[in-house]
Image 1 (cartoon, rainbow, N blue to C red):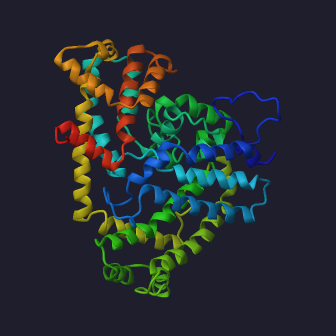
Image 2 (cartoon, rainbow, N blue to C red; image 1 turned 60 degrees about the vertical axis):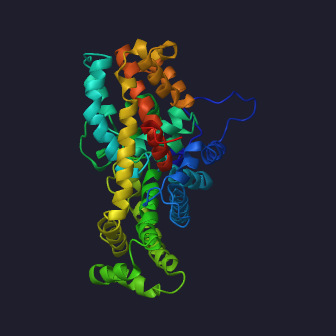
Image 3 (cartoon, one colour; image 1 turned 30 degrees about the vertical axis):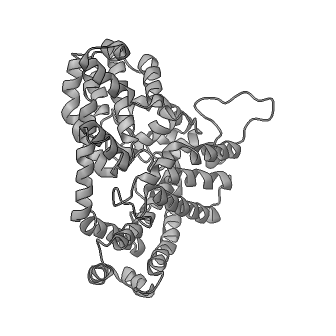
Length: 455
């Protein structure tokens, strides 16, 4: 059996219906995953989460969905490049599909307003959760500091795993879920060093799932599932030029401004790509992006195969684009320039400030639900006093799917030592699932409603 035969499997956490026919092949299972993924609501919601300019209604500016489609196509091209030179036996269709679907799903757990939204949520959680826990539960057990640390972190990649598995119940193959994980550390675990420890890759609520993934793919205990490297590289390649193209299209950056900086600061390789693409002529950005991507496809595929054995063993700790070669350096310059000259623009920051106020406002408006003892929270439907009526209406705004997951997990989730703490943990997750799943526009609508500004 080759390494990839052990990595590309039909196994899921929950077994499917027993069939009298032949067992499901890995390819058939992964093809079934594609259908579930493409039709799931988290992917559809990406169309109303913008990539660079929150709340932008201009059709030509990328949404998270159009960005993810571009990442998916780049991932497909990378997978085909790697397969063309790979000597090991591998199911090529399944290999390509795993990479493509990991690319399509890589942003589904991101909250409204992207990474800025993550920072807002983390700040609120760090400030407010300790006092709310004290009101609702009181003194914590010996396990509670670990659980509190888990709740006070929020990371889009970890939320993606929770969203797809625990909330949507897609029951994807373990191979597909493993390909989606960029980081190996749980939010409840301390950093122990290593590149894939930087951020949490899963929450305590998905611990049993991750244990099953690691049992099936032992190298993911310390390193990434191999195909996650291709998903990450595809993401980096897709937004490197695209963010600047959107900024020019949106009018917050001129081509002349970009050209001046590039010709003065960038390496000779990037300058040559710029000049060869014939700036100012129709289709310039498309030619510019393609010229760089053609070279990056070769570079990334070569790096994957050069480090192949270490990647398969889970010991490779560098991104495929973290190399001292001109195309990778050019891409990094473009990303750095976007952060310096686009993301810090007054217009972008003004939109993010709107998101800051709305996100914090919603979290604070729903926080009284977290201050209630368990018995009061679960009996809200029967309360008739004024405060109870308000809290009940807040409770009714929580999605039925998320409430069902809360009821299930707060009663029976494994690894919790205290029942009260388990209930409150999943009550916080309920609120975070609700808020993080909102689109940019839905956040503002909900905030206006809560402030009394909506008819």
